Length: 313
Image (tube, rainbow, N blue to C red; front, side):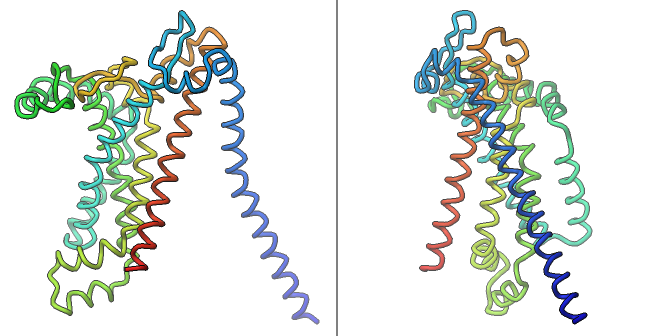
């Protein structure tokens, strides 16, 4: 009898714990739903006046005439995030492989400490560093050189301004590098040592073991780390606001100034004077949420497809 009572008490505790976790997990969905609901309610006046598709595809942003289009901001967000991923991903993955596969323990501790420090720096500090250090270097050295060597490409044409898509993307790359590297390191540490040792025992070199065993094993986790870095890049506000130039225009050159979705929301929401202007900014928040959702869903689909292809192979 005593054992039955203890068993029932244990089952009751397990059920209570499961219910608590379910409620906590569901609360995340409730919070996200409330955020979306509030943004939808605020954006109704703008969508009613402009039309959703006109708002989404328009390129004019004129609060005086209540004319709003989100396309330049979507473009600026995607371009800066793409630059950040292209620059940060190989460096972060290479750093993670070096720290887990090749570096001595003393070097690993020192480098890991600096990676953690880099992740803790506030974004406004990155923006200030970009303005004072990165922008002059790009304007006076890097962008003129890129214009001379690669000026025949549209993305490297135009006058070297220093402010624009390129510095914003570079600073974003520095900001998301610790996120991608840290998650990748944790993924690589979960790999069974027997797989790596087996490849080396069969005569593979260190690089062959990494290429043929380590990277395929950690591919899904690395892609998840890249997704986290991309989400950070899409939502970053202050550093991008300080460096992108804040011009609602679409340019093919990375040297040109632009605007991003988080930057325009941060700059104009406090000064929005009418329901249409406020609704347009809330609509931009919905667009940013949608862009993040679509990219994350696409990345997860890519993970599943890669997993299926690996199983089939």
